[in-house]
Amino acid sequence: MNTINLAEIQAVLASQPAVLLYFYSDNCAPCISLRPKVEELLKAEFPEMKLLLVNSEKHPDITAQYGVFANPTLLLYFDGHEHQRLSKYVGIAQLREAIARPYSLLLGA
Image (cartoon, rainbow, N blue to C red):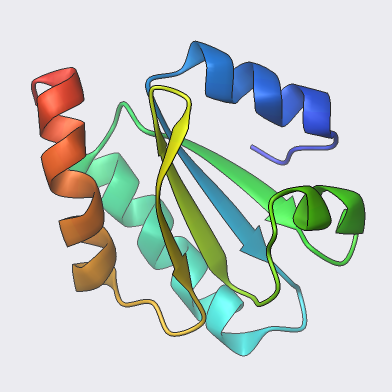
């Protein structure tokens, strides 16, 4: 889902139990290579987690609102609260581990 404004992000965070905010740039090689892996991980192992994509270059106001200074940055939200922040050198194993426990406790999956 490509987000276009802060209100939309806040609405999703308020209504969904598990959300991953993915801040990226089209000029960021790690962003480009990591994104399909993140999408596949969520689809295969965490299907109830909502993925929101935020292009940092096109939405500097949203990027600033969330205190994001590097790409890629992944913010994990559970029950509307930021649970963990992963930035720059993010591995899929690291992301899986960060999501697994709170996801299973919250969603019983």
